[in-house]
Image 1 (cartoon, rainbow, N blue to C red):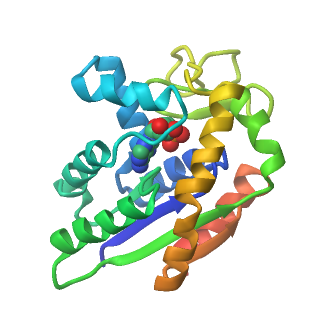
Image 2: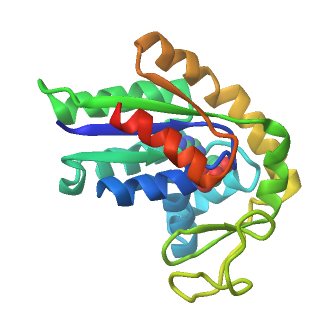
Length: 219
Ligand code: AMP
């Protein structure tokens, strides 16, 4: 049966790391809207130019722009057995659109759908963001303080230079948290009411969180 996973949680809660691992484990595409938008910015496309104006302020980019990207991705053959969606949906409007997209694609055979909420102590998150780095090639996420690469600033897997995201500074991070609590946090109740929400204790090491995630995925 097709398996659809979406993830909720504040910035730097560990979703990126765990969803990368999960997509490898299940061999499902990892669809990360933040990375897709940053790729558009790097290409200097029209969409990228629009997205940059919002990302630089810690705001959500317009729903139509992200909705088009998601509808296209989820309709691809690579998603026919399932997908791991990271960073979408991020508002009630996006959640309702995702329901529509899934309905159009899955038709009369609805997939197994799990919304996994990363419940975490908020006090550590700003520190995580400030020290975060990622590999521009494979997407692996590091943290100078909590999960350093073996060689400073170099990806362990690809040997390419690690990058720090332009929006991973204290000022934009604070705006991103405000946006999360205003726009995205209401989705916890939305999925709870549908009976598809799974709460995960996201405190602890990567391995501890992974073990908890596996129980939900296999349960
Ligand atoms: P992330 O990499 O998930 O932290 O996302 C970085 C930024 O990309 C966010 O702060 C938003 O500005 C934008 N973004 C990512 N996903 C979405 C989405 N589903 N809807 C609107 N904006 C998004």
